[in-house]
Length: 166
Image (cartoon, rainbow, N blue to C red):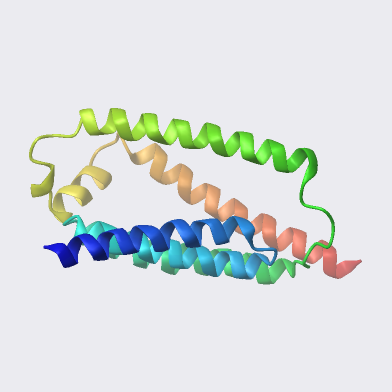
């Protein structure tokens, strides 16, 4: 019991530290690798909470597929390490937007916890799949996400071709 608590809080501290490294790194590739560590530690936390299915999805989809896509785009664009000042107005705007995002996240978690069904721990992967793929409620979000990812890949290729042509 006490080992579970130590492991959970250890994974939470790793997630926080690697999340800070995502923001603090100057190299986009190092930042992406820090994001992979964040996602894997979140998977450990999901597993410790009894959601093994979500933990596996976290590793396979986010830490695997999405991060490979991110790294592909970063390497395709061949980004250079910026040597300029990262502070100034952009830094203050980023801090302000981060605070707003944190407040919105707390509100979503607070309101979401109130609307959880009583038997949410009994949900199986078949229930999740049935809800995602048979209900028209999620069809638009699923299709919009796939179009967004496809357009991001096409945009990255177009930007990379323009830079090579110069």
